[in-house]
Amino acid sequence: MVRAPRVRERDVGPRALAPSWMPHSIWRMAPETFVRVAKALADPRRFEILERIGAEGGEVGCQRLCDQFPVSQATISHHLKELATAGLVVARRDGQCVYYRLIPTAMAAYVAELQRRVPTGSDRAVSV
Image 1 (cartoon, rainbow, N blue to C red):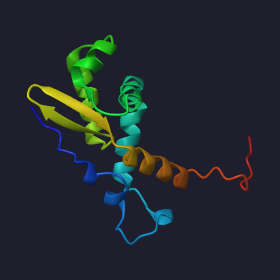
Image 2 (image 1 turned 120 degrees about the horizontal axis):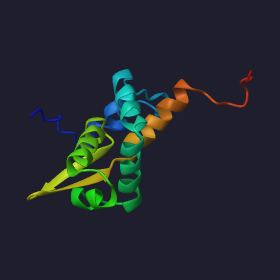
Image 3 (image 1 turned 90 degrees about the vertical axis):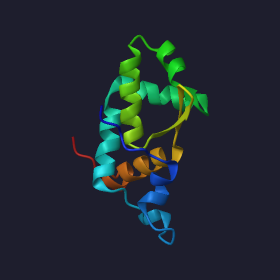
Image 4 (image 1 turned 135 degrees about the horizontal axis):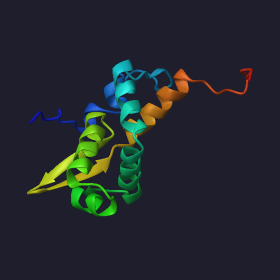
């Protein structure tokens, strides 16, 4: 069994994207990180799981997530592993239970990078 790399909150989000002296306005997410997050969010079930974790406002146990979705525990675990690998959630093990928590700074960094890559300013002409 291949284990996903352990992701700590300090390894993702703005602190991992830029030096502390760099202004927020010029932070850049690494291209491979941006693609990894985009792929993780592209799956509808995975996105729904992320929404549930975010809606809790704290930690959510894997078993509780399994009770909320009509898929197997293995499928939920796979989705959680992908979200953790993308740096969107962080896991905490307590005995046999694993609890997941959203990393808001990672989502904020992704959204900021998406806006930087796809500007939507009103000053740009839109042709259809």
